[in-house]
Amino acid sequence: MKRIGVLTGGGDSAGMNPALRAVVRTAWNHGAEVIGIKRGWLGLAEGTYETMGPGSVSGILHRGGTILRTFRYPEFATDEGAIPVGNTLKKLNLDGMVIIGGDGSFRGGTKLTKEFGIPVVGIPATIDNDIPGTDMSIGFDTALNVAIDAVDKVKDTASSHGRIFVIEVMGRNYGLLAAQTAIATGAEEVLLPEIPHDLDQIARRITEGYKSGKSHAIIIVAEGAAKAQYVTYEIKERLRRSVRMVVLGHVQRGGSPSGYDRILASRMGHHATELLFAGQHGIMVGVVANKLKTSSLDKKKPMSAKAVLADARLMEILV
Ligand code: F6P
Image (cartoon, rainbow, N blue to C red):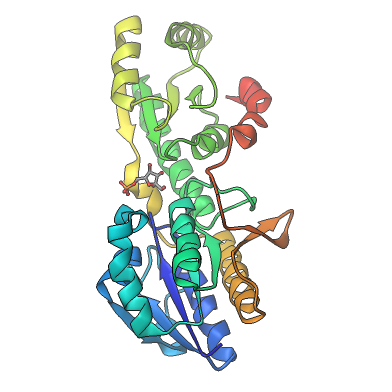
């Protein structure tokens, strides 16, 4: 392999930079040239890229986001949208590509191989942690810690005022980020897409909590379960108390990657590149029970409710 490409796609997540750094340095170690595609799949369509070496990835290990930038480009799934991508690929003459992103990016990666014959290895990076084949995706740990820190802070003011707070946590259709935020902050209630909820019961439990001496109530809402605004309105209607809402939103996607994410990203970036150079492709790297593993890149679907439900009993008792 003389020349490989690398791109970051979908929503950014903290740790994409250390993953990119590991890919570039590993490929450099093999004496290969690395082409960094700018702005994800859009960059591949528009032909915006740069040649990268160790110098281009120096000083990025601790930086959030992605220096390659990213872009949501669903057009690549269409025949028309794939034409400019094909034109760029002809120019670039790549021997392989490493794709850092989520399930949408992996569908793109599979298409690159099927339609343009480019060998691809994927690295899972999303704050949602909804990709099968790895215990953790890059960015989940950082996002979880950002959410925990924010909820802890809200709790201080909630206690001072005796208020109820509804806090919306990201995660698209998957509730793991919200579930773990609720467990780690000892929230009073959590609403998840995987578990049906009853707002009357929630209101009753909050009333009981106040009666038994609680000074506040924190309700964590996964964005896939309900909108914070709706829950806030409904709880206010039922309890006639002061209820405030906070939508954590994209704050959870930012910040310097945690130590865990830096190590995970470095291991995955290095392993993915080594596998590509060893002639393997059509796979995603993952870490399962602390061991590097691979799984097929094709037909990657977001995770089922299983991982969230595994903690259902824990939540019943601790949340
Ligand atoms: O997939 C990551 C994620 O942050 C989800 O949790 C969220 O639903 C979505 O991306 C938001 O997408 P965007 O940044 O395009 O608004």
